[in-house]
Image 1 (cartoon, rainbow, N blue to C red):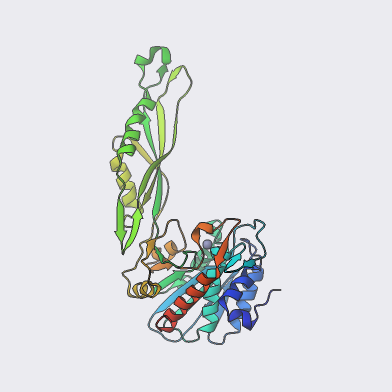
Image 2 (image 1 turned 90 degrees about the horizontal axis):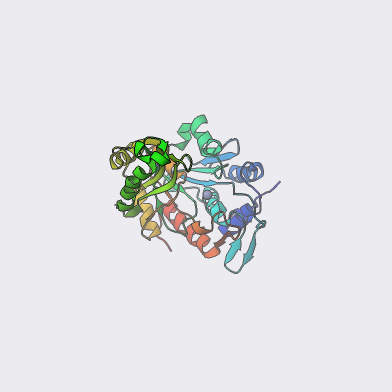
Length: 359
Ligand SMILES: [Zn+2]
């Protein structure tokens, strides 16, 4: 069984390496969860619990505000990139970027910061890289939702040391035209549904997508045809044509507003919603979030892609992503992290939690 020595727990880089070297592809997190749990239980200032392979630890210092720091324990499948190897300032290996370098920072802070300025709930959770149903935080939200309560949350997902806040929503609809089927030799008896789809494509091509700035983060919307189907046979005038349209919308719209926008844009056509997921507002107007962003000192950017930040946002808890990994390297065989980024992230987070200026 893997064991995290005190010397390893005291150094965020060594700790990253140790976590990377415990294989934990999604649904195989028992060993890493055991090691993390044992490490947390060695710290007398934490109360520690576990739900499946999700381990959590809390301080209870009676502070007026509580923050969540969360990192997932799992990785995508290995790709000849296990265990880690280090070359100069770069550590290579599965999970180095997404997100054991971030998870290591949370564990390092949990053990090493007995008196943070806020009460902290730390989550080390399983199954983030697979179906939402199995995600450790989904299970916590069912079994013991009060555990998620906080004033602010930081997910230590890879952001290359920037604050990535909020996320865009996504909705996919089918826009359909109908016509009248007829023999192609007597086409004047029919009405061609594929020809009628030309107007849908024209509206898409003419569409000017918004770019919205919320709390200093830019969210650039996008509206795209992502599929088109129609036609019966070469001797038939088709009576149906369906265009699949995907809309990535800024988080100032909710799902209902995004749907209403599409219905208005495609007025006169049948519009059917296929799937939809909400975005998340950056929440950077919240005092604790502001203070955090100021500590990082770089302008926050909007997150492209969904993370568990949306889960906290849906609960009304402002949340953002901040971690040492490079998001462009996540899930790649050549995944790696810069050791300098781990050290910088450790300094920022520790100064923030200790309420000290950055050295
Ligand atoms: Zn991740």
